[in-house]
Image (cartoon, rainbow, N blue to C red; front, top):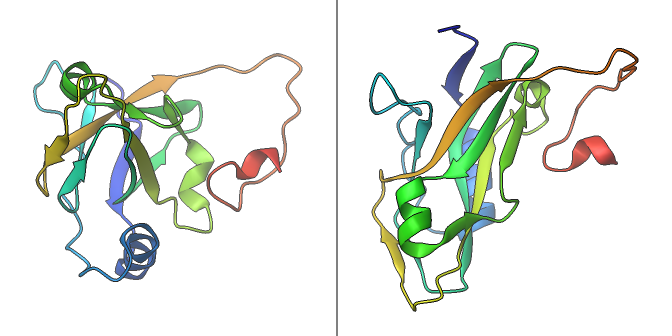
Length: 164
C-alpha cells in the first residue's frame, strides 16, 4: 500500500467557529478521534461524530468533523456515509459523494472537512447516534488529468470555491 496522506485536527479556534455555525451556542465538545480503518482489509477510514445527533426522517445536519487531511498530489479523498447507516436508514450525504482535493488542505478554513447528512428514511426511522460513533468513511483514490490540462488556479476558499 502507498502511504499518501495524513489526517490532522484543525485548530481549536477553527473547530469552535464551525461548530457554533452548525449547532449554535451549545457547549463545544472535544475534537473527535482521527479517522482510522477498522481492519487491515478496510478501504475506508471511519470518521467519528464530535457530538450526538438525532435525525428524524427528512432532517439534515452539517457535521464539523474537526479533521483536515494532507494528501499527495494526484490523489483525492472520497467521503461516503457508513454503508450500514445507508442501508438501515437511507442516511445520505447531501452532495452524494464528498470530494476532498489535495489543495483543500490549504484553504482559508484550514481544510476543515464538514459533512452534511440527510436521513432519507422512507420507513419512518430516526437516526440516533452517540458522540464518537463512526458515521462516514473516506476512501483515497488516485486520479489522472488530460494531456492538455492547463489548470493553474489556486484554492483559497472551501465548499464550491473552485467554480467561482
